[in-house]
Length: 334
Image (tube, rainbow, N blue to C red):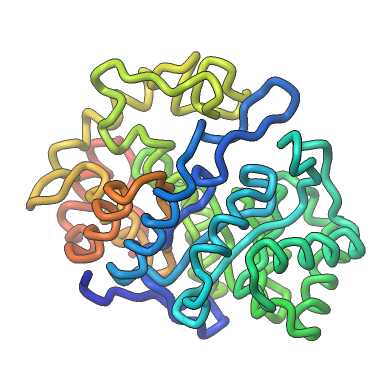
């Protein structure tokens, strides 16, 4: 069993493991037209074994979204957690509209009625009667128009459907708006050793919000797996038909720019017995007391490696500052 290393989920007073598991990949393939949005084919039985392995190693936080696999990620997670619901904290997201049969994303719906319907659908797929953290899944939505969304979330909480809420956004103005909501507990933002976001970190520290880190391993670039020429499949979001926002992989190949950054910090991240991925997670824990990385997984082996990062804990202050120097960044205020 991994050493107990916990965080508090912002102002919610919900205690979770310092490491969560991101459940995007276990949803399997889904698309917007011909553009792949998933991580390729997946074995549901292996996903279930991986979820059980994570729990056995001390992981208590699982983050998914209704759209991952067009509902399939929630279904797999719900089945895997049957009889274990009281051992875990579940976060999911809403906004996308999709066809569960064709696995096509068809639009979005952030109206109060749409939010309530999406919540009920997620509860059904997850086989639970409450969601611990319910997150708005629209990175660039205008914050000045988000009042009805926040109000709808407060109502879901009053009705006992959710325990807390947040916004998956990289933009401080959006995070600041939600932070003024009484039961906002977290912001989910892209954050990793290659891509810092000082403004979001500072805001979460100021408002005592959990900072859930999506992309903590830079879409797999920080695992070292793609150094030897291995390529993502054509139905993978990182593959040759990847969406415009995919920056870590270009035309199905690791980005030269980001690969150079990995090379610069590899030695420090993998020192002291850590793997490269474990070092990348350790950087996030050293970055702020608010951080909660959620690396994705498809296999038991991936879960075991990532969960063992909790045994090492954060990088030392000296290691952290050396990495900032190597990447040409000013050291953040600690």
